[in-house]
Image (cartoon, rainbow, N blue to C red):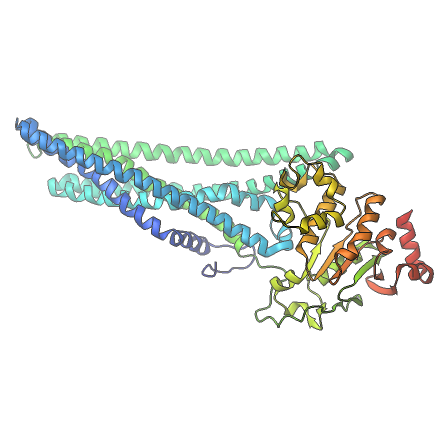
Length: 565
């Protein structure tokens, strides 16, 4: 998306939305060019059909010439076959354009979501992202799909106008003046419709977010008796969305009626004028039949043009939403000119707390306040900007993607994705590391209990697993990533003591030769750490082995023993 304009986060103007639409059109330009040619041939062949029919009437029926009637009837048949073939092919290419645009938008938003990373939930609601992938892609795909139909309709209107001007200047001028007036009348309704659609789209995203929050926290809501409060709020928002939808429907109904009534009145006017010209002897019967066919065919052509205007207006609303997401920048972001990455087996340091993470060691952070340990972990992984350094180089000066490949932060709020469990864990068929990671995380029994083992389909967020099982599977995923420095925040807080003891004993040997940081106050985990740093008020105030600190630092002993009790 380098060619798209960058705006302030949360701001997207008309121009940037239109730039996105133009980028999408250029993305499918090869297929779109083919569909444009097919659409022009398709609709222009249909526009020529009344002329052939009128000629067949004049020469074959009025002139009582069976041979001429057969020739011109065959010409109409041939033209119909051309129209049918080009129409089928145009529809095929139009469907391709719709799919390419819609799912190209999905690819953009997924890549951007991954790029923003952990900052995404703080910047955009989940409902907003979901709405982009459900409703907005349909509007953008429809805008791309109708481009060729609008172009074909415009070409057919030009052909019909030229033919009618050549046959009857008066009727040709009526069509030439009447078509823009009809389009202008419809265009007056598009701006109010677009504004109402923006309101609806905003409320739809808000309601989706609330629904996701309610489903996620349903157990907690039931525990505290908050179901009625949240359901009442959801009901109120739902009714507001319904009201906004009804307002769109009302204006949409007026637009649809206008698209039928105005072209119908126009058809009646042209037919009436044509009949008068026939009675006056200025038109033949065949020409009147042709003029009626032209005018009748103008109705769907005008509907195509007004539908295109409507869909473009709706697509601009959807494009603004997508652009707002695409304009977000990671927080923190990579520097414009990153410094060279330090050598491997480097020391990771957090000057603010005084913590040093040495290569190849299992370092534990025990904090009187767990929030202090979590804050240190986020600084070490550069989830927040700080003075943290890798081998003396400030993390803010390093390329963020390269840093993420070397330093991995695994938190308890990380989620398991829907799909095959093996893929969710990041493993591949035949990967022997999966068995080792399952053994380290004491998660083999989880996989054994599944009907398909690692190939079992799991639900979003791993809802079929208990909290402790999810925690062990997240640990498996972190171990399979195998980063140079792995930072784990409370990795065993939801498992029983027996399972925790097995994980604690296996984690160090499994991570031999690479640095591992564990934020915990569990005595079982601390006992297996190579080095323990005790943190109070955000600062490291004592370091050493677990047993040494139990005897030499009363505050550490109080924190750890409180956890044990």
